[in-house]
Length: 272
Picture 1 (tube, rainbow, N blue to C red):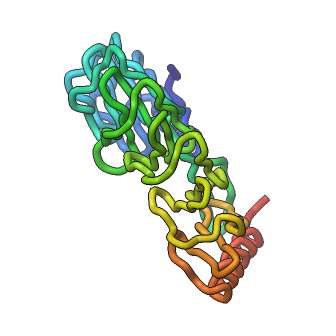
Picture 2: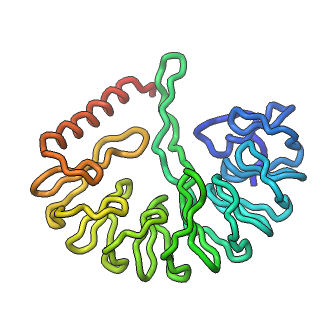
Picture 3: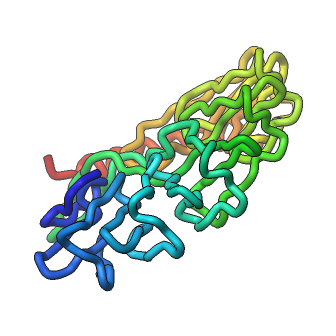
């Protein structure tokens, strides 16, 4: 647990909760009724004081501060309940619930205009990831409610700790969706920050099979990137790909040139 910062810093998870000496804030939002003297926070999203527990600036209902703990950026629990940013996970077994990864996805470094000057800050993260209890595997992706990974085997399931992929003895998963025709013992992800994967003679994008992609010549195209997720580009011997869509080599080259030009323009404007 961390004590309150006296300043807010968007790029530092330890400084998302802060105080001006009179009130407690999460980012720019005042937390009504928060007790400064007993307030502690975890990971930038979860916090508690002597009376209440919090997710961001919102007070959680029916919590017990004495047993409340943040498990990672995405998940928290107390003796009775388990939460994500999407709310209470109904029927989760709190006694056996555990996280499968660090609960975060990188959004790359952060750029911000200050007084007409562009500055580059540290890497930023959002809550993503898997958790499990004696009954289910769960997935949260910073959007909506937490989902049950319906076909997952709780005993053999492992997360790739990238915010997106997991597998067990029977299946490979992208989020809560099964990647059909992918075999856990031969499947592999092709690049860390990309959503392409391969199993034998099959190429996948996210959980979708890319029909007729040539597995021997298929390769992911990496482009220079400052912030955000990289454009999902690839090629094989017959064409290029944008996400799972086939594009011509000419279109692929335009996408690569656009990314390079954007990177150059941003780099030239950055303040050291």
